[in-house]
Structures are given as structure tokens and as C-alpha cells.
Image (cartoon, rainbow, N blue to C red; front, side, top):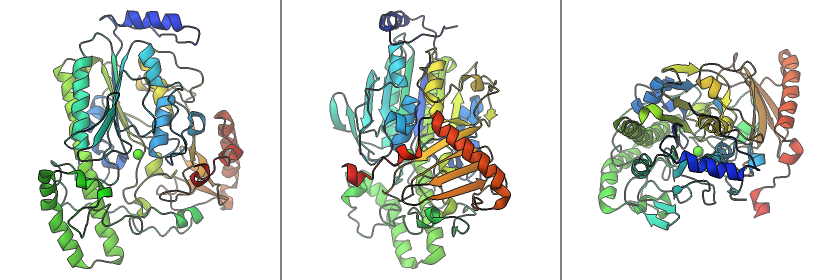
Length: 524
Ligand code: CA
């Protein structure tokens, strides 16, 4: 057994002595591998079931669920890439860690407290490999090797302490190889390790790797029941959004239906070498030819775009799944599987055609919920499913407690350790606060904050409009009907308003603070 490590501002000396003593081979604390994909919908993980599970299975990611715990209600606090990463690192809401949106208004302040720094100070070896996307260099890591911004799928640039280099190959495979290389070095050092392995995939524009190009090209995926949502019974936010497969998804850049065989520079595909390019063209050219000969329009065109979208998106995930398998195999082959915790998650959820959308941002279910699977042999019972309301706000606290490091008081989430052991605390949260800021901006989803219980969601669109929405997920699981003005909900509405006020107070957020964030055009 290991003992909790006390960290305090006054205890610099004891932290140092602890770091020294934990460098001995006797440190029994668990290794931790945190694998995070980018935009990986829970609907696209077969362990979660659903209509895609047999058509596009993820057998390796499912191994984590089989060996450990699957979380069915893990909610993010602000469903957009960079801000989610900042929440994970700090255990704090966006307005507290300062990274509220992806507009580049400010880089992530790496001088602040993060869980990797605390782990490092307690004697862990720490590494960050893959997509970082926080506009400042990583801090708290002994080793880091990150993609440049969003990164490229083919022959991407990686940035490390030594500078920038272009690696030849496919991004998911490169991140895997770099991670395995680091693990091979870390395992023999006698210190426990914590690796953050962040995939770029399956982020837009969903460019499949050389080994998955043909995987789903002839597969027909079932359409979600709300693909042709007309946003009746909802407000201006839904009616004015800009993220539909119909209007926002681009035939060329998103679906790779390039009329010109010379692919545009901004697609990233010009980075391919001639062999990669030839393999790509052999698959896509017949698709392109057939599409432009078809003359599709209207609903038929939307259905076609949905299929092309899923074929590419799921092919990107197949490479991520293979990567997870390689990491799990490495742990087994090196006798590390018994004392290594593996966490699989995504920075947020994603729409796969629900409400006619792709992308994320909203407090609606598919982007608000993110997949979370954790295995920890000997601690988490295999094959367990948990329905508690957990959050990416809890990851930092949970990982610290896994490592026996005291959780600082100013973190805003809560360690999930008791839940992992099968003992959900009686006072575990039953309501969750959300706040999305990125508007005006790309995709144009209006700013909103709100709260959810297991059954209801109360949402306030507040920036250039003032509209409230209320959803009853029990009566309306697909979230198609705003019942805010339905008198039948008057009393629950009043209760939820009180709960929302109290959550905003608890997390030190407020409507007036939210309005101080000007559009990025004004701050740049
Ligand atoms: Ca993302």
C-alpha cells in the first residue's frame, strides 16, 4: 500500500525529499496512461452499444470496458476542444483556468497549478504526446512531443523542447510509436509514470490513414432518427446555428470530393508523398467521379453526405482503436498491466448526424456527454457500468488521488476514486453546470450556460439573445421539445432556476462575468 502524499505551498522541502525517495524502485504507486481522442463520440465506441457497434466495432477500446468501468454519464463543462483540455489539466471551470474558447484570445497559462505538475513533484515521470492545442508550451512534463496546433493527419509537424520536426507517416500511428518509445524508457526507471497520449483523430477533416482508407467505403450506416430535424418547438439558437451536414459540411474539404486532382494546400493533403497520394487517389477518385455524375440534391444529398462523413470519421477511429490495442498489448508483454491504470476518453462528445449536425459545442446530449472508460486491475471490478454524474472536471482530482497525491482545495471537481471502487458517495453530485462561450465564431452556436439533473436540462442563451430552454429527457430523450413555457413544468422550472443560481455561485461564475468576455474581434 502507498500513503497519501501531502502537498502544500509550505512543503517545498518535503516535496523534494519525497521526490527523491519515490525515485527508488520500491515506489508501488500505479502507472497511469491517459488516452484522449479528439471528438470521439460515445456513439462510435462499440462498448457503448448503439446502432454502429456491429458495423464499426472498437474491440480494443472495448477491452478497457471489459477489464474495468464504463461511465454512461460523463459530462463536460464546455464542449469545445482547447477549453476541455484546460479543464482536464486544472480541475477548474473555463472561467477559472482562463481558457474559455478556441479563438486564441489568450494562450493557456501554463504557470498555473495542473495535475501533471503535482504528479511530477511527487515523483512521477510525466509525458505529454500528441495533440495539445493550448497555444502555449506544455508545463509539468519531463517529456513532451506535441502536434503543431490542430496538427496534420499526414506527415505532421511535432514540436518538442528541441524544436519542430516533420515526421513521415500517419498521425495516429506516429503518436502511438512515440508513446511506446517513451513507455519503453520509462518502465525501467523505477519511478511510476503518467503518460498523456492525445490523438488528433477523429477531428475534422477526418482523413483516414493508409491502412483504413478502404475500410468503410462501401458500408451503409443507419441514419439517426433526427437527421432531418427542422428545429420546431425550439428557439432561435437552434434555428440559427451553423453546423448542419446539409449546409455547413463542405463537399470538398470535409468530404474530400475535390474536383481538382491537385488538393488544396489548406487541406493538409498536399503534405502526402507520392506513394501516400497514389493510395489515397486510388480510393477517392472513383468516389469523386461517381458523386459528381450522380446529380444528388435535397434530402438525398444530405443522406449521401452523412454516409461519406461516417465512412471517413469511423475509419479514423479504427486507427485509434488499433493504437489502444498496441498500448494494452505493450503493458501485458512488459508485465505492466497489473499496476497500470488506463483511462480512455475524448475531449468532448460529437454529433453523428443527430439534429442534422456534426461538431459539438451544445449542451445537448451527444456533445455534452463524453465517453469514459477506466481499467485498474485489482481496484475496479471488471465489466462494470456506472451511471453516476461524473465530469471531465473530476479527472485531475481522480488522477491525483490514484497517485496518492492530496487534491488541492481550489480544484472544483471531485475525485471519482470511491466510484471506481464501487462505493459512490451518498452526496455525489446530481446536478452539473455547463458554460459555452465561443460565439461569434466558427460554426456559430450561440453562447449558453445551464445546468442539468439526471432528468432535466435548463439552458440560457444569453449573449446576443435572451432565451431560456428546458428539456425533459425522460419524456423527450432526443431533446426535440423545449418545454420552458409549458405551465406543466412551472414548479420544476422554478426549482431548476434556484439550483442554477446556486451552482453559479458555487463555481464562482455569473451572468455578469460571462458578459465581460468580448467577441474575439474586439480583444485581438
Ligand atoms: Ca475536440
